[in-house]
Amino acid sequence: MNESKNFMSVPAGMGDPIISYDVANILTGMFCFMVLVFSVPAVVLNIINIVIFVNTKIDSITVCFISLSLSDLVAMLLLTKTAMVSIMRAFEVSWGKNLRTYLFLFTFGIGLSVDTSSATTTYIALQRGLCVALPFLTRHLFNRNRSVIVCVSLFLFILACSTPRATSFSLKNIPDPADNTSLLLIVKFFETWGPFDSFYTIFVKTVLVCIEFCVMIVCASLISYGMQSSMKLKLNSSTQAQPTVGGHGNTTEDGKSNGEDQSQKKKEAKESLVMKQSLIVVLIHVIFTTPRMLASLYVVFEPRYRVGAQYQNLYFVSFSSISVTDSINAFANFFVGCEAEETA
Image 1 (cartoon, one colour):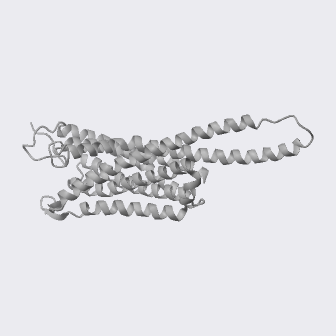
Image 2 (cartoon, rainbow, N blue to C red):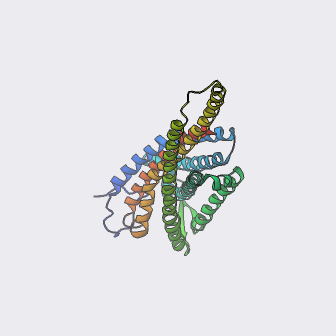
Image 3 (tube, rainbow, N blue to C red):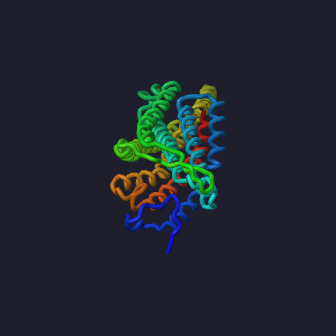
């Protein structure tokens, strides 16, 4: 019985692939369609986010959300293109024969964008967590210029970690006389590919992500604790500030106190909204990034779970489903960004 084999085909004799080629093709196509459902709106929404933030007062947190929106935008553009190519391949479009190579090349840009988004989200969580836990010691450390430097540095760091792996192979167009087209193939992997790919998978996709998760969880706990402390402080202040029956002079003092109370309440409400918004960013990121981290860990400990190995079909299916969570994450960040714009 012949099974249909496209980009998921593996060399003969590799053993049981766990998921058959036909099932893998169906599941991958289904996940690609789900990616389009979220990635296309996410592209539009992230563009709107960038425009809104650029036209508001640009402070430290605004710079971070501009950086987050930019990295999400690039990731969604590449994911959209990848999903469209995968769906077109199902209908046997003529240039779909290069799908395997296209997908392989797109992963570098997607990985760079997703990793930058993850690092930026960690910086947002760290900034808000420190400002809540140690406001008088750390609040002055975070300003617009420093945040620009940090966001650019994070991108350059991720780029430096990703570039060696992305330059460890060569491509070549091979003419196909059958239909007067050409095949774009990876004709050679250099000897440096193995070490660089292992470094990227272990360090960037596993170690860094675990560190980011630990930082986010600690910062989320600090933000949550800060919100609870703020609520208790408000209750205590309102209890102690009960009006007393006094003489004629209390009227003026009460009027002044009421005005100050309203200003203080607005400030506290704004700070509370910022903390809630930052907490939501962290929780959304942790929830939707956990599948990618677990899959990367499995790649480290299971050598058969990778491209060209026995579990290649499972690899493509699982990372196609992870692309859905990435697109939902980028889609949800727009609404979090709207709350951030309200507090700007």
